[in-house]
Each structure stands twice: as structure tokens, then as C-alpha cells.
Length: 399
Ligand SMILES: [Zn+2]
Image (cartoon, rainbow, N blue to C red; front, side, top):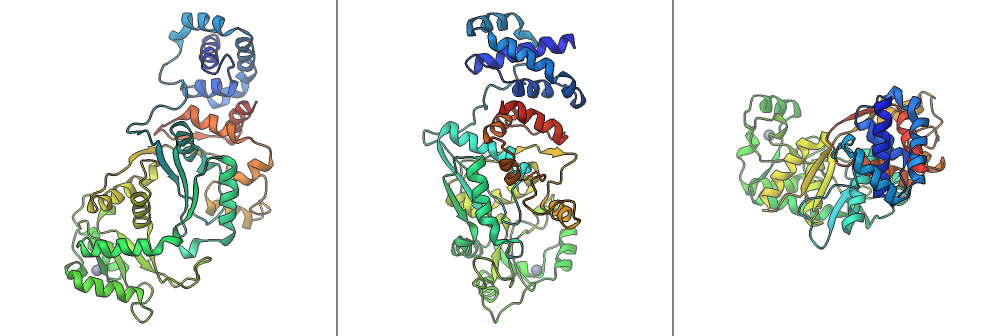
């Protein structure tokens, strides 16, 4: 503890100097946490750390700086963050960044930390923070989710420039699809899913790959027309290569037929663009400059870069964030829904759930999550936490 106490004091001083003489115990705990303070120790030391922070806050800024000079060797430069690190390639116009929630369930803490970093960068540099509601999966789109996403994002970020619904931009996705066919970079594949999978596994071309541009345009129109292909009979594929070393990159799908009635668009469309087409088109059209996303999107980013390359567009600077995993909270929509169905929770608005709705109801301040996100910054490291530890830090930031 002796050593930890000294470190806590050094971090408290550093934090105080940065924030006009007032250190925050949440920031100090979080810094120590990154340094190897064990989860089970936080509880034990929280009071001690609070005491140290209070002592430091009683000093004048000059006293703080004087003392800090003597002990700053204890503090690792890298591990205590004084605000967010600078992003590369930022112009005078600032940055354009986005968060793409799917309207399939409530927003929860898992969505927030990395997207909060994007929101904070837009606050820091100026520019635009766009919320693009990913509603081109008609089967997974709930009508009440739209207003809930707006309510939650307005509250947690406070700097949303614009809300956009993907499904309002269908003509644009279609025109890109046609453009890809015309550039001989996409084709309509009518192979059965299983058959294509086998071909992909064996790095073999499917017969549809040989079709001419003209034939593909005709087949694309057959996908769009109600007397043409039926659901599941045809998909539009990107022509990457069937010899790609990473199987996930081999002629991946761009659009498919679904007759499912969309909550906003009804039965207006039967061909729905898939994620990699939608995201690429939006990122190109909105001139996204920087993207911060989960590590699980690495392959998608590679696919999207291939689409950017076809159009000669520069791919945005991208960072893949590590996840925060909670050992004891249901954080996927699937798990939340299952927990509600099993009777464990009363419904989506049960305030024991880790949803943004519940956090707001419980009186949490968005600034506390912002400070946590800022402290964590850009990191590829996954972190496993108990919700108790997480909220202890959040509570400290709330003070
Ligand atoms: Zn095929």
C-alpha cells in the first residue's frame, strides 16, 4: 500500500494540475487501475484514495506543481491521460465522425464508451457528429427504437449534429450498387447459400462470376422487380477474389432480397443493401474523416476499404477500440431480451438493466461517462470488469 499511496498522490497531483487545481478521485482510481491495481483492491483503497485527493485539492496550484515535480517519476507518462490524445489528419474544418446504432433494441453502456470518444473528439475539434440509424435490416427494426435512440443520444452525447435513417437513402445505395456492377466489381449470384460456401472454402469461382456486365444489370433488375427473383434466390456480391487468403473477404454479399415489411418503409423495397455497402456509401457521401469502432469490425473495415478503392476514395482514419466486458451484466440485445423473457427483468425499461434509459432514470450524469471515456482514451486493450467496479469509478467521476 505504501507504494500505491505514493502513486495515488502523484496521480492526484497530476490530475489536479491539469484540471485547475481540482483532482477527481475517479480519474485517480482509473489511472491506478490501468497500472495494475486489482479489481478486488479498489473497494479496500477507495477511501484512502479519496482522502489523498481531498488533501491534494486543499493545496494551491503552485504547491501542487512544486510537489508534483518531486514525485512525477512515479507516474507513467503514457498511463495517465491528460485529455484525449490528438488525432492525425485533422484539418481546420474539424472532424466528421459517426455512431451507427441499429434500431433493434435499447442502447446500453456497451454502446457508449467508444462512441463517447468520437463525440468527445467532435467537441474537441469541431465538425460533425452524425447518428446514422442502421435500419436496412427490415427483420430487425423496431419502430419504438427510433425515438428511443434520439432520446438516449441527445442525453448521453449532447452534441449530435444530425440523425439520419439509412432506409431513407435506398436510392443512393442502389445507384452505388449499379455503379459497382458497371465497373465490373459486383455481380448477381444465384448459387444456393450452401453451394457458395463450399466454393468459397475451396477458393473456387462460382459460375455467376463469369457473367457480363449487361447480364448482371439485367439480373439486378430481376432482383428489384416483383416478378423476378424470389427471396433467397439471388444476392449481389462484391467481386473481390475467391482466392483471398482471408475467407471473409471472398466475394462478400452487398445486397439481398427481403419481403419482410419494414416499420418505416412498408413494402416499398424488396432489395436491401447489406452492412458493408451501406456503411461504405454513407462514409463516402458524408465524407467521414475519422472512424472509431469496435475491434470486431476489423474485417468489415477491410471489405469497406475495397469498396472505397473502387471509387478512388481515401479511406477514413480508423481506430479499433478494445471492448469493456462486464462479467455480470447482460449486454447484448439477445441476452437482454432473453433475461426479460425469463422474468428476470420486468421489461426494456426495468431500471436494473444497463440501458441508457435506466442510467438516466437513476440520475447518472453524462459527464461521468465522458470522463471515463476520456481517461480510457484510444485503446485496443479489452477490459473485463464487474459492474460494481465500473460504477464505483463512474460514481467517483460524478462527484
Ligand atoms: Zn453464384
